[in-house]
Image (cartoon, rainbow, N blue to C red; front, side, top):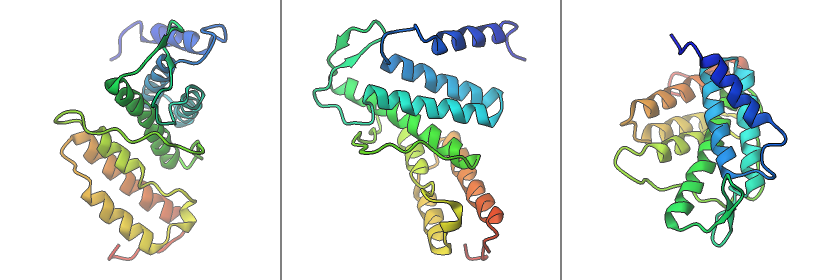
Length: 201
């Protein structure tokens, strides 16, 4: 059972994030907060609501410029003060953007909704930071999601996707679960499109 004040806490956070007077501009802290909100909604409410939140998160990331590789760009923190980013800061912003993108991609495909597509993404995928860091593997899974409609997912593409999916290390239980989820989504999309799935697939 959840905490007895969970509903109040969630409503308070919702009020802060949706308050139009909160902050003069979008910050990377707000992007982080919307990622957490999306994950919370994915676990507690209807799929449509979590998909909407994930889409808003991507637009906020775009508004902050997180979709571009940061060399000498100055970011803003929650207090609207400018801060220069060192190498670790660059890596954190990369992880933040790719977290937002993979969540939107997977939720959209799982529920047959359109993901947010950004032009000119130059932000580099994050590198593995420590033993057990599975974010790069989740990003690799999200990048295997078909970009076009499921009707264009031909038999050779499906076969190659499954091979690439098997090549992604699945040492962490969540990575294994995500790989299985994508397999089920691919199968479900083919069934809905009345595409024949051969045994060798």
